[in-house]
Length: 80
Image (cartoon, rainbow, N blue to C red; front, side, top):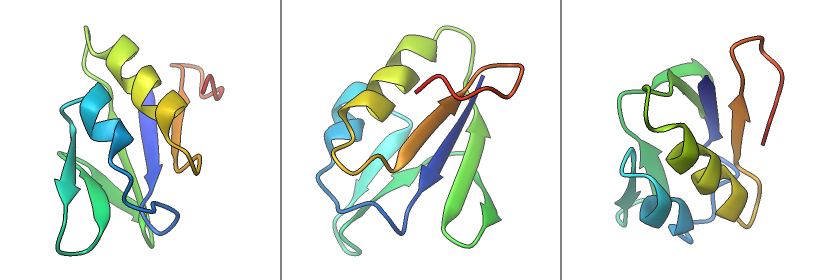
């Protein structure tokens, strides 16, 4: 499972940080940060979801009010 975070779209509501500890508040920039991620494109950060964190990653994506977070299954299909 892979998660993709569009940091440019993020509005800093930080709801994702309450759902998964891989997201942290960056109050200085008014955005969330996705820990241990790589920047695949400008402001698009991706990382693998560790085993056991799937539910938390999905919930972080579901609560994002601006849909800045997407989750993909192992076949590359978007599930959230």
